Length: 286
Image (cartoon, rainbow, N blue to C red; front, top):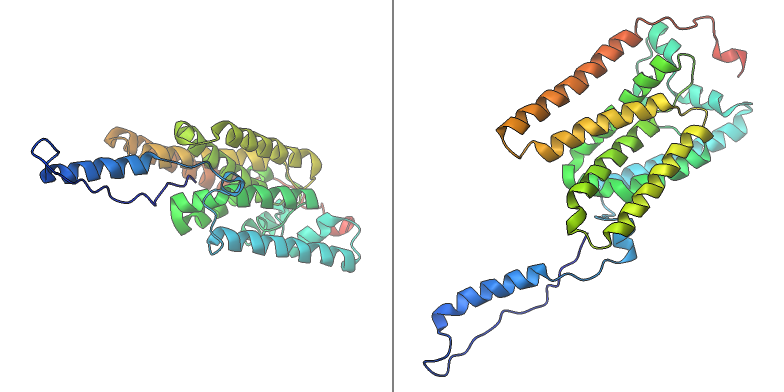
């Protein structure tokens, strides 16, 4: 977020003879001075580049803190529980598992499945990316952004379940890739207005690569979650940036948003009717 110089005082113009500027012109020059002040910018600090729109008292700070504490508790429980595999802890705490959702009707796993991390690398990269980009999204969209996050996680879990039917899955990558798409679309829109634009874009690309690496590193994260998160973020970003251009684009963006959520509902229904290995039991390896 760019800071603007705000300590320029109003210019006082004195007239001493008929050839000087008249007092009636004073408001015009004061207005021009205000415009000049608004256009003067000072370089961004490192904090403003890394954490734009940072607000300690914000929903983003609360979410980042709670998820960090959640992973710490999750890891401690893994160490004291005696489970051989980390996935067993995830399952017990409510990670997404298609067989239980379909046959046991444990729909709460759509929500709890978004709260956990598959590894310490997954947790670190998520929290770093989230705190670097989510403050801007909260500034743009307000507290409603929490609904976007939840829907992104659910969208990712549905796609994951359709591709990997017997996988214990966490949906946080669906959330983070929605955030990456929304934040990236905002960077494209504001590119020519930003100071240090190349540095910010470079940092964004690094975060994008690091988050794709979580797919390779974490067994409980897969490409299905990423696809769901990207589709969700793509639809919402188009809605945000194009709905105010004119009536035609407004209608198109609403139609696109409706299609995206309709597809989500249809995939949800499809998931409830697919065949999964009901014989496959978690307790066989936990």
